[in-house]
Each structure stands twice: as C-alpha cells, then as structure tokens.
Length: 536
Image (cartoon, rainbow, N blue to C red; front, top):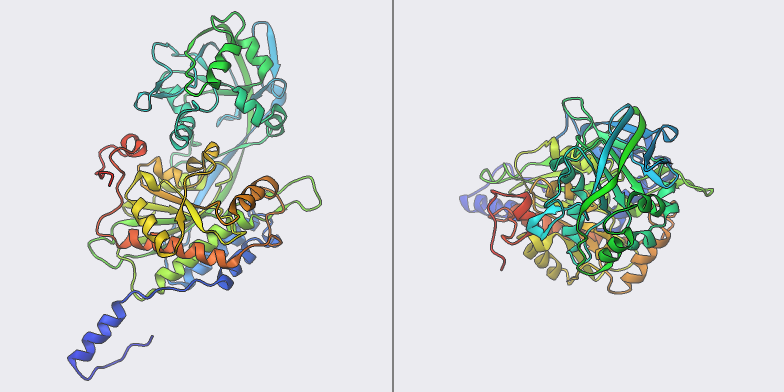
C-alpha cells in the first residue's frame, strides 16, 4: 500500500498510523507452496546432497527467495554460512577387533566405525560391560555406578530401557559417547538387543558398513567430535558378542533377557577378554552452507531476542539400485523448506513486523547427522536465541486433521501450539511412533542440546493419515519415489504453512520468551540456570 505524502489533519495522520500498524491475516496458497517444492525436488537438483552442485542450486533458490522478501543476510558476509566438512572413510581391510585368540575383521561379525582421525589407529584394553551405558541418575539410571572403566573399553547395549519415555531415552542414547568419555573409557563396543536384532537384521547393518562419517570443522581447524577421548567404536553381531562374554559371571543370553523386560536394567561387570582394535581411516574435505536470513524485530525491547524457524535443505543425492537413482526429497524436505519460505513471506508482508527478530535458516547435512544445524548452534549468527520452530518432512498426502507437536509438552511453547491448532480446527495428538525417537532425529534437537526450547510438528494419523503416513515410510521414504509423482495435497501444504506461521508469530510477539517447564527433563538437565515456568 502506498503511503500518503501529506495529510489534511491530525486525525487522518492518527488513522493512517493505526492502519499501518495492524497485522493483516496472511494468505497461504497451494500454488505458491507447490512452486517451491517443484523447483527443489526437480531432477536437475540431483537430490540436493550436501556439498554437491544440486544442493548449491537449491541454496541459491532459497537465498533469492529471502532477498525477494526483504530479509537481511545473516551469514558470513552474505546469505550463506559456510560449513567446512571432513569426511572419514574406514579402510575395511586394515580394521579389525581381536580377543580370546580370535580376530574379527571389519564386516565379518563386527562393524568398526570410522573415527575422526586420519591414518592407522591401534590400541588394547580390558573390557567392562556397562548395561545400557547411560549415566543419568536424574532419569533413574546410573549404569557406571561402582564400575571402574578408566582407560578401558566399555561394552554396552544399544538403545535404552523399554519403560523410559522415548524422547528422554533417545536423548540419553545420543549422549552415550560423552558419558563413556567422562567416566574415562577409551572405546565403545555396542551389543545388539534382541529387539534391535529383530527390527534391524545384521545384513542391514553390513549394508551400511562402508559408509563414510561426515563431521564439521571447528574454528580451531579440528574435526568436531562429541567425545574426542573415545578412540574406537564398533558394533558386534551375536557370534562376536557371545565370544566377548565367554566365561562372564552373567551369560549374554541372560543379559539380553533382562533387557527384554519392561523395566529391565542389566547390571555391569568386568569381562574377561582384553580387546585389541585396529583401524585405519582416510580423510577428504568438502564444503556446504546454511542459508540464513533475518527479519529484524520491530520492538526495541525485544528485537535483541531471536526466534529460529528452520528446515533442512539437503537430501540423499544420487544412489540406488533401480533405473531411477535420483532421491529428489520432495517430502523430505522440500516441503519443509517451502513451509519456511511461505512463513517468511507471511511475516514480511503482514503489515507489521514481529516484535522479536526471526532468523530463517535452510540448513545442510541433516541427513548426515544434523550437522548443519549443529554447526549453526555452535557458531550462532544471531543474538540471543529464545525458541526454535523446526519444519521437517510433513507428510502431505492427505488433509491432515491433527498434528503431533514434539517438544511442546516441555515448555511454554505448548499452549502457543494449542492455540494455533485450535484456531485452525486441528487436533493435537500423542506421538503414534514413539519407537522412532523422532524428537532427537531432526535439526531442532541440536538447539535443545544448547538449552533452547523447541517444537517440531508432524502431520497426524487422523482422516486416513495413518495409512498414508506409514505407507510413505515403508515404500517411499529415503528413496527415488519421494518425488512430484506422489499425490501430494498442495492445499495441505498451505495449511501446514499457516499453522506454523501462527505458532512462530505468537512466539515472536509474546511478552515473555519461551520457558522450559520446571519439571521438564530437558529443561532441568540442559538449561540449568535459565528461568523456568510452572506447568499449568
């Protein structure tokens, strides 16, 4: 709307000021949403693998959208935050584990994980079984209690106890390396539970045994590692695990049976063998970028606080066995990026800017371990970050009538999500896939680890959603069929963008920044010293 260059009276000045300050309800159209996805999921972007030309084309598209919407560059002198990566690939022929007179080569009963170090690595140490390997008395589990693992290798069960809340358990599972290092261990052997062996046969483990490990390079030029003191990691199949437990005071079969119980907590003890490990890694370098744009806040008192709206831009690139090898990533995660762009449009064209600043970030290398988000969390480009809204793979094959709001129950962002959903006639549903541990498997988790309240919406199972969602996971997810040939409901895309806009807008305009609830596990353990809130 054009502004009048003059006014005939003070009244007209006041009226025009009032109109310009109003926030208009934005519109979200299926056509605009589809346009973004159609570009990002096109074959010519070749699956947008981090560090490839296809990803760079996607990044250029997002940056051009940000510029057209009037956002401000927030990167290293522009729209891009450069993320340097190191890739480590294991030399299988030079990697093995030996103990008890037997040698298990990489890929033959054991899988040796690449380490963030170049060249040959060897070592030898006693082994201590440490249950699930979780050191978290605040969560009711202290597997290292009474055990001396200093300078030793720890053998631990994969996963976490069955009775533990899935989000807490998945978080603790991701912290095992750090916990082992803090207790003085130098290596980790992971033992597969009966449930894991059933759900993920050893053949599937072997199929990924040669995959390289990607990590980012810090300002000190060192490859990032959550636990640099852990020199060696490997996963054992049943035969190698049985051999490791030879002569143990508790047989492996009994340990696994205890883990099968709903409240099973296998106790730790020293094992008899001394393990020697051998491994060799080659190193290569690559570069990718996060695309970052800022919408400055309008309230001088709140503009120094920032709300992050993010979506991962990368996907899996070109690979596979069929004729079509392009993993286009239409749903995962061109739809999330489209949502972010449309929310940015709504924020910038609403008639009044949000009170807090909004950082929009299309991050790289999510598929490699949430690495672009982790780099951004450790190398911030904005002032005080107070909340995160993450946009990752909404399954838009139906008119969703409910959503699952991961993280909402942990902070005062929960009521904000509830109000946005109610305004749109969308129900809130509990997590229908707790076994997947989704709260820790997307980019917002890297900010949760820094103590920042976060929320992440998943389209729910109502209105036929269960069949469509699970069918997508079983037949399409992480494959070439995730393309524009799917029967995507573009109106559902516009609807998903609107609900996330309402959430982010209220967070940005609220008088008080989001707070963890005082009884939240994540608030208590990851945000100590921050103000919290009583649960309503």
